[in-house]
Length: 321
Ligand code: SPV
Ligand code: MG
Image (cartoon, rainbow, N blue to C red):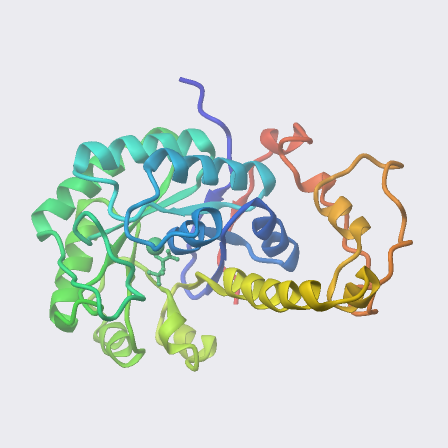
């Protein structure tokens, strides 16, 4: 088995890691260019952007691995994959981790929703969690599969989403840590129960959040109570829909393409992002509204696929405030 060399994910005490959620390779490149030190392959966003489907385990393991591979090949920063519930029992979870490792992932997150999962952002959906023992078996198997790749394993707790309370969340989080999780992700609809858990200081492993449903909480407040990092799970997808929905409406009603230019980047900007060979691209001749006038730095140096040096020099990436 040939194991690709990759960037490693590492959490450092007192540092807050901002993790950017990608729905495809290009959104991953944009996140990396913006400065995100680590990325998240969002199941919700991949289901929506690549399949126009709800996040209910309809995307297969192979499809998720393919999406992950494309993202890992496009960026240098470590990529954490949302592996949902591991696609079945512990055997499925172990195979998924191995495939993600071969695809270049630096981290894998497995959640305790039953199969088929229902996205935590569907409040009306029926919700059931696997038993702690079942989840621990999954994480133990995942940990063994993760070892040859140095994959960072995250055990995700859905107790608060399932209204099972903070005690259940703490019990599960520590059991998952004991089973091999390097960090825990306790998903929540509000910050208050997270604050209670963090202040109890009973968690044995670093805590990562997905603050989608409590976006008003500042990262400073999260850092102050010892949270290790936050995932911006779906903002890139929502920004894409926001921009494209409005553009699609303008396209159908406009009398010429020029009317659309104020809402567009230049073709040459795309060329730079996807590493079109130097000298092949128009310079900056396509019109711009001025907001994109700043030329992005070349992504050529950043693309492992096109730059073999990247694979030879993996780097440690740590949390940043
Ligand atoms: C995802 O981004 O797919 C996540 C986070 O798992 S959430 O959608 O909030 O469950
Ligand atoms: Mg998900």
